[in-house]
Image 1 (cartoon, each protein chain N blue to C red):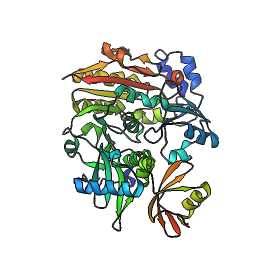
Image 2: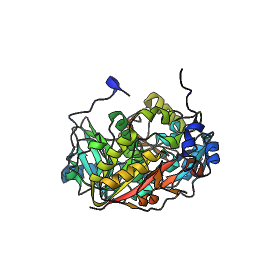
Image 3: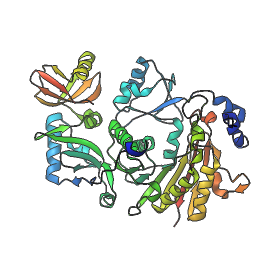
Image 4: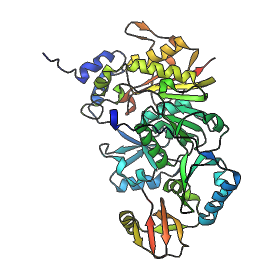
Length: 156
Length: 309
């Protein structure tokens, strides 16, 4: 890619902030309550925050030194704040959803394909409304939103 | 009168003396490159569901015994990029020999590691996998569009230990010192060449660029970014000694670096100590050359060095 087609650097790109312990506990509590993911899974990770997103980043004593670099991204985009609720990203669920014990929706292949195609389908299940882990044939596909009588896909 | 373009056979003739079993090398150039993938063990430990899934889609999948978590796939003309396993981040398609620089690097959890020319991320993601996502990897590339591809791969594989930066490698800021630096340098790609397939003209197209000059700038900056005692791995996918031994030799003359031996999982040949009448540092025998026809993958050069002072 040459000349004007080339992407420009984002001069505003800055390090996300390391969140305080209270905020971290809120995130871990949400993951445990909604999905049954044990908090200790994240013992070796920090959560970093930008305006509307939380990023998962390996816990390291080098963090202060790394802040001298002009970065593009740090870690894995993990959660988004959507209308006051926390929404896990598909990337986060594909990696850590294996530790979940609830909030999992097992779909057959036909329903998954239809959901991916139509993005929103009529659906009823026994789960509490909210964000769910979409699983099919034992593989975790990512994040969906279950609302009474409908299922919304957040798969990319 | 226009010059007749040089054929591959004519081009590689210059390496006849250094390539072992040269007729077999020429023969291999007529075959498309074998197709491999790495299993992403951060998401899946048991390869069976992945192998079964790919089999259902018409692939034949065999593990590579010498290189853990690598699998060879046929038919090699098919793309793995359209498969469900790719989409879910269970696999990372990459040539087998591309794993070699990471073997030389021996990354460990907790280390601060710089991948200076990282995009699209095959080695960055392999380092993350080797360290169970517990090293701190700074993945750099001078082009933002290539970093975008790298970030997409990090997301797809679910990796959380990587910071991405966009700097010119030769001018990477010296504020941070690293335990290890990997320079998988831009190169003429001769090791990737196959007649009539991808990469056919790469070595001719890049011929006008001063690759050797760029590589020398990168390797010196990489050394300067190391902590004392830190490890530098320099690699290319080319046969050309001007881009390999000559670059490492340049560093040895400019800085106090020590070449180290390392254990490779694939058959290799020692680095050259002389080329075109020009002697190189005798320790360059510790560098390793991997030839495409012997390893059934892209040809590679890998040198491992330690910063002495």
